[in-house]
Image (cartoon, rainbow, N blue to C red; front, side, top):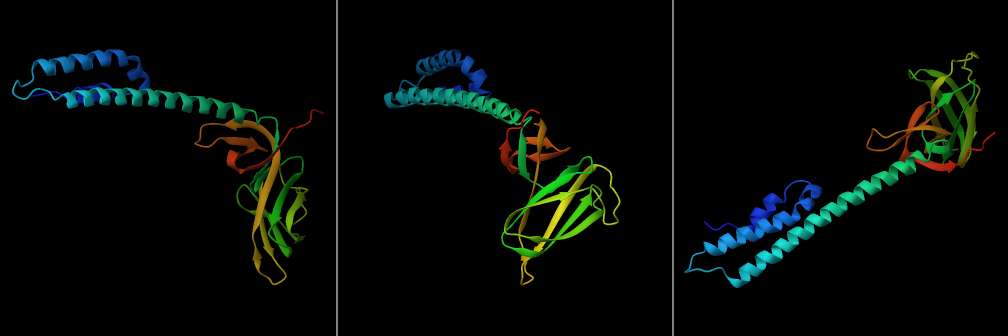
Amino acid sequence: MAVSPLSALTQLGQGSANKTDNSIAGDFDTFLKILTTQLQNQNPLEPLDTNQFTQQLVQFSSVEQEIKSNKNLEQLIALSGANAFTGVVSYIGKEVTAEGATTNLSDGQASWSFSLTKDAPSTTLTIRNSAGSIVKTESVDGKFGANAFAWDGRSDAGNTVPDGLYSLTVEAKDVDDNFISATTTVKGVVEGVDLTSNEPLLRVNGTTIKLSSVKAIDQTLTP
């Protein structure tokens, strides 16, 4: 039974691009040996067609180029990953503004920003603790665009709440009592980077935010 040199080469080429590339010369020698054996054992009444022989050589060249392309792709991916790592680490120590509703109350101070798609004279801000319980509710006159909100860490009862993570919910209505879309953002200095997830996470204000949620980056000033 005739053996296809291309089929044999394909089997030999299975595995990582690195491993295959290192043995490509040996694979070519094997290809030639298989092809020679095929020629020696061909049916004299049905000799190997010249066009078929040429096709096998062309196919081998194609397989070789594909293996090299795969190896180059692996190298590009590795280089891209290294560059991405370097880029993310450079965020440490910088102040970022990112989409998010959770921030850290520290020394009785916490702040958020929220954006409205139009004026919202009836805007209710609700602050919840990490357990999801409401600790503060405040009504404000929301304006189109960016709005800043600072909290002194006091509850509706006037008590000082402990430092920790708190989230802000914005419910905005226009003059016709229609709900308006609102987006909250938080700001803080990047303290570290978590690369264990599919997307890098930045540690800011005691919590984590996705890299894709970052809207602005500022260089922090040394006191």
